[in-house]
View (cartoon, rainbow, N blue to C red):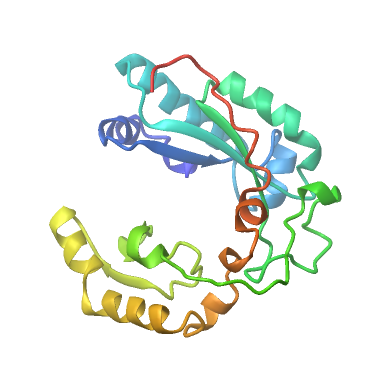
Length: 226
């Protein structure tokens, strides 16, 4: 998302928006590694965008948005974990975080080309049965870049997209629309009703470790008040 912060006016709008936090997906500490995973991305442009946001926050004396510099660990960048922490210090972001890669919606991918070689950094899939109940579509709205509201951020093909919304009032109308209520009703009756739900890694018995196993390296990089 930092490709879009080349305009100072947009940076000012971001800081003025009241947004609590912003994840900065920078999956590498050098241009060569970043661009292997973020194909078509511009490492220098991304760092410049982050620097503009940090500078605007400092100018305003604003604690928000909290800037979370995040790396999805893969075969290209697994050797750059320490360098990535240093990058966070250099950029003066608020947090640095690491996350395991979800190379396939069904969990661990069979592809050896993208997964880290260090097995401690690979998301594990456990084949145990457990009682599953999804509450995401009741409490976790997603705003897509096309302006539409989604009921699930993991439905990567837009299966839960509703109508676009432009303000708070229309959001509540969309969030409680007939389409949204129908989706929730179907999920509540049968968690396997939708094909993409059957592949969701949130259904793992050890979801906390399976999805966020490497996000333990998250520490404050500045002393700004929160």
